[in-house]
Image (cartoon, rainbow, N blue to C red; front, side, top):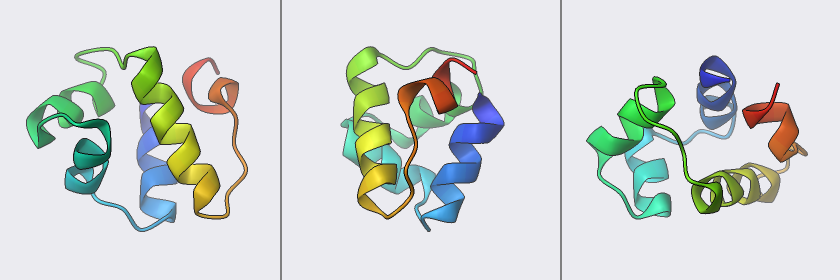
Length: 67
């Protein structure tokens, strides 16, 4: 999962800082979640999926978080 999130984030040209801002959390908190030290909340998962889909890549919650 973790490499999947990072991979999609990089594919759409976004930084950890940009994703942290999207989720309304600090960059450090985002980094911990992307590394698997903390879990993403369901609302955060939805925002990530929406951001990726909004950038032309069709992906589902299952593709990233439940694979």
